[in-house]
Amino acid sequence: MAKKIAVALRKGGSGKTTTAVNLAEALRQKKQKVLLVDLDPQANATISVGLDPTKLDKHINTLLTDIQTKVEDVIASSEFGLSILPGHPDLAETEGGMKATQIGLLKSLLEPIEDDYDYIIMDTPPSESYLTVNALMYADEVLIPLQAHYLAMKGLEDMLKEIIKVKQGLNPKLRIAGILPTMVSRRTNIAQTVLDSVRKAYGEFLYPWEISFSIRHTEASLAGLPIVLYEPGHQGSEVYLKLAESMIKGHKN
Image 1: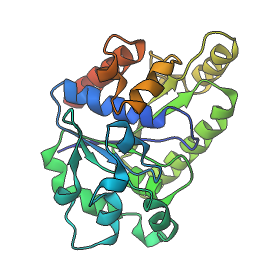
Image 2: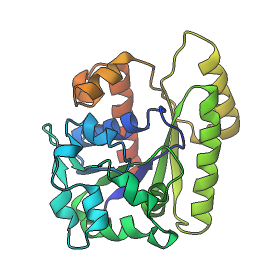
Image 3: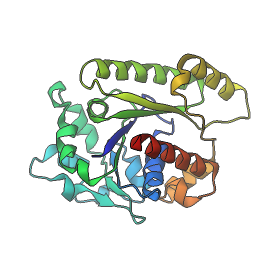
């Protein structure tokens, strides 16, 4: 059965999609069967693996709105072999019409294919959303990418509150996989100050690695490739591969 990981933070520009895409590909490179699920109406994860959501006949919105559609018929594959349940801008309208009674929808749609994968990685919207709640209800773990900036702390605190709320009701087994510092710039003291604060408050969840700020991540996304493929020797690539390895070891234990 697949291990389900939601990559989530209530803030845009945190490296959330970059982390979801690269973790998925890093796990695939470690010989794991991986499905990347793009739950963000911006469909950036889909674009980042080289697919144009507007040119796809079927996507996750099709699955959510058409009961005749089977999940197997919606899953696409990138040119480099990563399986993805693609996102689409139409998700924004569907999300706006979702009701509290539909928070188990994603789980019911994906459960039939769980045995086909080792990992299901979900990229969630950067704001309060029923799609995010769906992901948290379905997930085993939440990975929180945290931009090393003061403004990101509020997003982290909001995310932790939401996780606690879901854990107390909808999904008691939900746990935090870890907090991954992203877009870390050492040119100023801001990053270190933020990381010191996170370590003091949530040190038990903080990963021992960080993703340094680099234009290469943007270049990779524009090329439709994860950084682990675009530049395998990049600092970010090495961290995502270490992260994948640690998850695999933890999954086996």
